[in-house]
Image 1 (cartoon, rainbow, N blue to C red):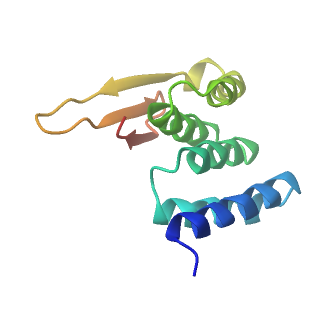
Image 2 (cartoon, helix red, strand yellow; image 1 turned 45 degrees about the vertical axis):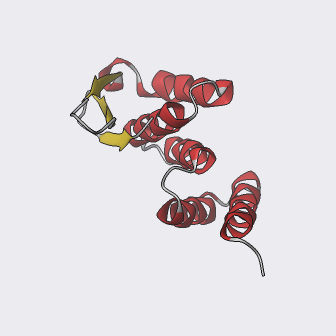
Image 3 (cartoon, rainbow, N blue to C red; image 1 turned 30 degrees about the vertical axis):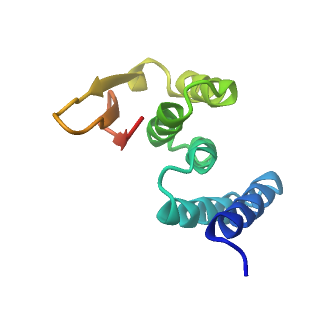
Length: 122
């Protein structure tokens, strides 16, 4: 019997295969399923953001990739894909980050100028 982590990583490998094969809808669904199980799966957050950018949902892509960066701030590829999404968005979607630090929580909010937002816990 596989552990949950092994099964999750097998699902992630399948999602990446779909993505690389150009099955954007299939990859999006696979990343969504992974994030239902583990909402802090940084690679799935990142690549689901890339899929959103390919679908023209740039503001959502910026927010999603921003969540991945909050979890893995040293991953250069995340920042590179954020730059691609920012360039695609143009100046009207430039993000701004709002940090809320309530006692007992470290929630971080990422919000674009159009109001699309997401949260991550660093």
